[in-house]
Length: 539
Image 1: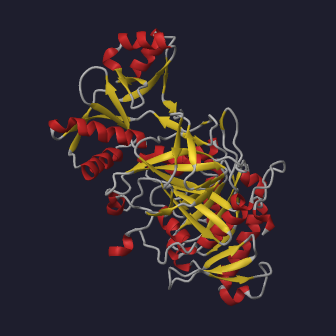
Image 2: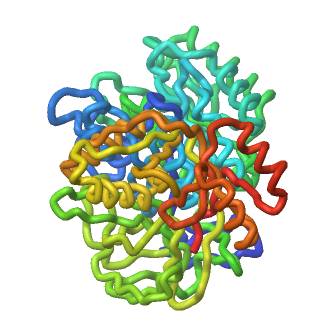
Image 3: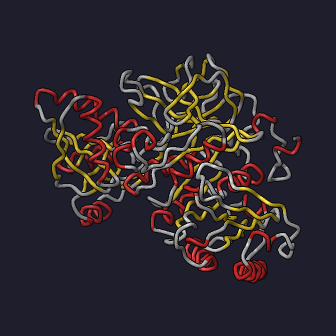
C-alpha cells in the first residue's frame, strides 16, 4: 500500500496517501466509438451501479447514468461533459465523460484542462477518426498521458498491426500493446495480457460478468492449448513475437511524459477488457499533478485549498433552477462549510452544500482532496475560469474560449418576452454553452456556437427550462473576433466601425465579420488593434 503514489518525477515529494490514491481522467473519442458504454462499465466495476444501462437498450434500461439531459436520452448522444467519482480497489477514480460530438468540442477542450490523463477510445473497425484526432491534439498541447482502448473487437475489425500503425502515424505517438486480441468478430475469444502474462477469456453469454483470467507462465505455457484452438494459438504466438520485435515495450516514464500510449483491446458492451484498462489507470496513471497558474504553479500536496471552475451546468435540476459550477481542486484538503476566497469578485464565499457526482445522482461532499471534482450550486456568482483559494490571488491559465464558427440572431417567439430571453441567453453564455453578442446597432442578440447542433440544443433547453419559444434566424455575420489593444485605440476603432461592433457577455468588445476581407482590412488599416479568435477565461 505504501507505493500508492509513485512520483513520476524523482524530485517531487511523495503525495499524502489520500491525494496519491486519486486518479482524475477524461474519456475522449469520436461519436459512437462506445465511450458512454465504457463509462457505464467503469461504474459497474467500481460498484457504483448494479446494472449498466446500454445506450440503445429498451425502456428503463436505456437511461444510461451519465446522460441526464433530456435531449441526450432522446438521441443517445452525450452533449454535456459529466463528472463521476467512485472507488476502485484502493483508488478513487474521478472520471469526466466528455461529449464526443464535434459540435460540442469546446466543452471538451475545457474539460481536458481539469484532468491528469485521458483514455482515448477508438473503434476497431474505423480506427482513428477526425474528432479523435482533434481531441488528441488538445491532449498533446497539455502533454496529457493517454491510455488507448480499442473497442468493438467482437465485431469485424481491422488487423491489429494496422490499427497500431494508424495511431502511430496519425497521432505521432509510440504505441505499446498492453494486451493482444485473440481473433476478432465472431471468433474473438479474448486477449492475452502482455504486462501480466495471463489469458483473459470473454464470456459472451453474460454481458455484465467480469471476464475470467488464467495465469500463464509465458506464451508457451501448455495450459494455453486448453482454451485456444490450435490455429488461433499459432497465430497469436506469431503476432506477439512480431509485436515484441517491432513495437516498444511499455515504459511508464515515457507514458507519463505524453510520448507513449499503452493500448488495450476489448469489447465494452461485453464488459471485456474494461477491468484491465481500469487496472492500467490504477497502476500506471498519474496521481494529481501540478497545475499551472499565475503568478506561480500549484502543487497538489500544498496545505491550502485552491481550485478552478472548468464547467458550469445550469438547470441540472429543473425543479430548483440551480446552476452547478464544476470545480477541479488543485491543492489541499477541502471540508464542507469552508469559506473560500472568490478571486474575481474578491469576496469570501461559504461553501455549505458542495456535491459529489455519481452521474445524475449527487450527494453532499463532506470533504474532498486535490484531484477531486466537486460541484458548487450557486446563483450565477461562479463562471468558467474562476479561481477559489484560501485568500491568495491566483489565476489559473490555459482555459480557452474559442471564437464561434456559426452566428445566428435569436428572437423570442413572443415579443413581450424579449427580456426573459435575454436572461436565458446570458445564463447559457456564462455556462459556456454559447457566445452571446449584443450588437451596438439594432436590437436582438447574436448567438455564436461551434457546431450547428448547439442551436437545436439551445432552442430545446430554452423552451424546456424557461418555457420560452425561441427562433434562430440567419445573421449577416459569419464570425466574431475579440478586439485587443490600448483603450483609446480600441474606442476609436469601435466608433469608426459601429455596424460591426458588439460586446460579449463579459462586456468585452467584439468585432463581427462577414468575410475574411473584413479581418484583413482591420489588420491593414488599424495596426494598433489586434483581433483574436480565442480569449483566455480568467479573472
